[in-house]
Image 1: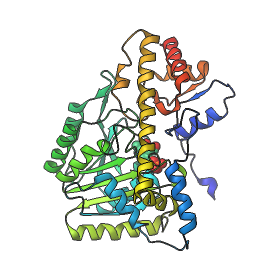
Image 2: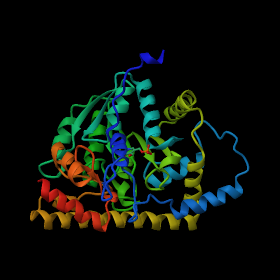
Image 3: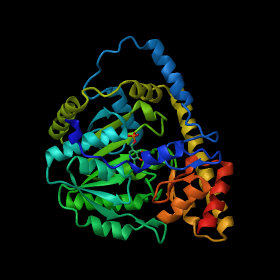
Image 4: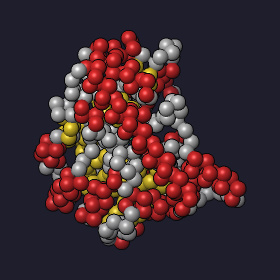
Length: 393
Ligand SMILES: Cc1ncc(COP(=O)(O)O)c(C=O)c1O
């Protein structure tokens, strides 16, 4: 009977990974998938993670079920990492989930159950899985302007004018920091303006936080979000530990909901338990327990902080190196915007044809919209990329 299934469109990034794997050219450069790689091209296991895993191997005495919301120490520790003691952040409920994707998915399910007529507003452009998941779940979505190709920065006036059309109880999906795919971040003042709009028009912000620590710092990257937590009556956060703990395949994330109304919090928590039971029952424990072990041990936490700082410095170094190499190779300031962006991603502003040429003629792989993963570069390939771009312009 399964022959009745319909063909599914391939995920562009996953398809690109396959093409890269099949390319035999030795000089190939992978700037596609959003995974941090060190200078040797390896996605390393963090030292703090290795130590926490060793501790757990010794101390864990059971593999019995934990609970439908997962490891609650992990949930609390993640709430503290993200929101610290920000105003009103004590009034929350949450659940551990399989990665940032799992957290988003479970919160989408709750939003759809609460209001089947909801519209979720997503940035143009955004991480392609946002519209795909919403479509899959039958949730209506609309785009708001976010990035201007002309200026290489945020079109904040366009964004606010689009969001002014959002109805009461609609949801705005924001990237907490290091916007994927553009790398263009909102300023704290812009976060405040969006919070005021949410307050005025009764719109619920949902913040997807997948790169805390990869932009300006673990605290700095969530300044806007923390202020928002103090201003709006309701806030949803879907955070991922894939990148900043390097736990990609272990699937670790957290879904948080803030509200001062105790009754609504309890209802939300019960509904989170229920949607978890109906999708995967219990979220996977190992990675989440590794994270809570790190966050609750001062030595491991200090190690982890340092490792995140090293990753951030290496990305920033490559980002600025690429900006300078492109300036030299093209003899122009066309790519100066790269220096303003944050995190692993930026879009080079190339056409689909130019992206294809880079792949065919230079074995350089990037997503069709010219998004590059800066962490896929190294000291040598920065110049290889810059010279190739100069040739195909
Ligand atoms: C913006 C954004 N949100 C969420 C995720 C989800 O990450 P994961 O499900 O691997 O934790 C990603 C991963 O690439 C992302 O870029």
